[in-house]
Structure formats: C-alpha cells, structure tokens
View 1 (cartoon, rainbow, N blue to C red):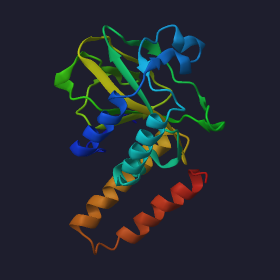
View 2 (view 1 turned 90 degrees about the horizontal axis):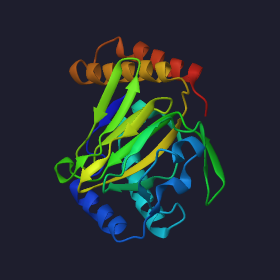
View 3 (view 1 turned 30 degrees about the horizontal axis):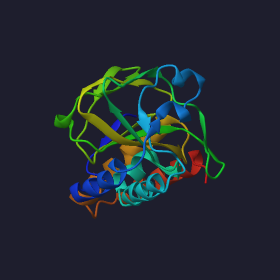
View 4 (view 1 turned 180 degrees about the vertical axis):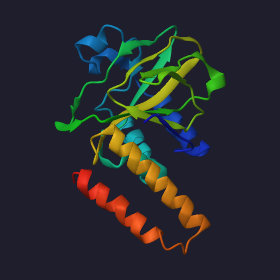
Length: 226
C-alpha cells in the first residue's frame, strides 16, 4: 500500500525541526548503506548517533504517535529511530530496494523493515527534482509532498530519488516493523478500518457496527504479532 499521510508535522514543528537539523554537521549518506545501495546513493545524512538526529527523531516519533491514520495504515510494532538526509547539487539516489533488516548502530536494536517512510521537510517549490519514485505492480509513482507530509510504502518496492538540480531537499526517513507483516493483509485491515470510521460517523447506531468491528479485531488477532 502506497499512502500519503498529510500534516504529520504542523508548520511550526517543521520550522523547529529544520532549525535544528540545518545547523548540524552532515556526513556522506553512503555511510549507512548496504553494498548495493552505496553504489547509487549520493546524498548527505545526519550521523545516527548525533544528539541532533536523536532529538529531532523524537519529535518525529511524537508526531507519529498522534496520527490515527498512520497507526491504522502501518499497525506499527516498532519504528526505526528516524534518520535525516539532504540532497542538493545534483545529488540523487538510484534504483534500490531497502534492506530487509536494519540494525540501529547506537543501540544494536534489530528490526524487520516491512514499510518504508519518507517525511518531507522542504516545501516542493523550494527545489527542483528530488521526487521519490516508487515502482510497484500498478506502475511507477512519483511523490513530492508538502513539508510536514509523510508517504509510506512497502519496503519491498524498488524506488529512487531523482537528482536535485536546484535548492535542497531535506527529509526524514525511517522504517516500520508492522504487527501485520503481509502488505495485502495490512491493506485489507486499513480499508476495513476506514469503512468502520465512516459508518461510525454517518450511522453511529447502526447494528452492524459491533459485528464488523469484531471482524476487524479478529482478523488483526489472526494475522498480527505482538
């Protein structure tokens, strides 16, 4: 499932986060790449163990925890501590697939990457290029969102970032290990949850709400891992 989640960060939160990360020291982004990705990755990144990245990541995690839409779509079991990257001067990231497992270097924590996420922190009018291009069975999708908006997509997808030819593109990126590993099952649960939300708003006393809610939770109980 490819899904845009708008306004994860409010404008004032974006400004505060950018104030922190823009003043930090950036390093070569290939430092955290696997062998295949490092051959096509040209960007800058905040060091994982820097205090700026850690504090900024906590702001992102707090925002995610407030989003009911993010929870419904991702069903997060754990979220990799958010990282931050920057593209400018024709930097880009060629075709690649994210590694199946990630190790958080500062803590040694391991997790499976079911879902990839990019949180845009630069207004799209401030840079040229920098589109996140995702390929799936339905074709090729180009994503360039407002500052504060998030996109999530299956980590199994081939994707790339086109070169930034003007300005700079700053983003946060991270991965989610979901309680429901299978993307098709997560999509079905998300669609059912969204339908239940609509029914609850339009017909809050409808007698089907309870059994349908029961079906949702029983499917989650069947497919989910705690």
